[in-house]
Image (cartoon, rainbow, N blue to C red; front, side, top):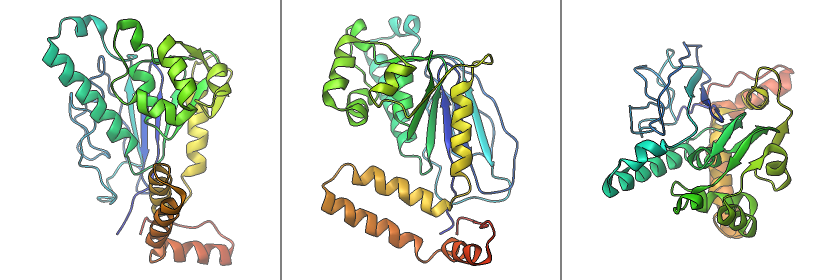
Length: 280
């Protein structure tokens, strides 16, 4: 099976998602929306595909569809999270539907078969942080602000925050953050292991985004199949006991053995040249 590799980047107030393909370079795009109705676009040949108001669709897959696939998918969202004025006008059923769609969006993000990086240069509160937590790696500027503040509004995180935050920083610290609705800066988030890297903010206000791109460039040369199954092995293995996790690793490793990319990697090593992986 031909498998595409890639990555994503998400940024604080300006939410940025990049999905990189090992394919021909195509046009990038920028979209803007409001609240958590994220990522609407009329772009026809992109990955993952999206539809207005519904988050990420389920039509993405592990196979590159052709030469016109985007090498970099770029999306931007100007808002921090839910529009509370809009939320106040919703009926009980509309609120429930809204949160359900947000939860689906976070799960789709977490299940993307490529590495994703969240870059927080501004503020990521409530749903903003939940979206970052659905990514594989989070980096932030020291001046960034992040927290799950829902208890201030007499609700709880409803899009994965109560589950992903404890898995990221441990149960006690997660409870403390959620119970207190505490907002952390980048340094504080780094000290408790919530983020992987903290950067001093630059004049352009995109220090975390630039760090995310630097990490992405480290990921891009690797084998696409290996990247996909490595993420799968880690994610599934963390939810089970060690013996079962090792069995998952064995099954994932087996998927790389018959690939053309594995043979290309061996040839490139022998010939002392960069490998030319095709996700096959």
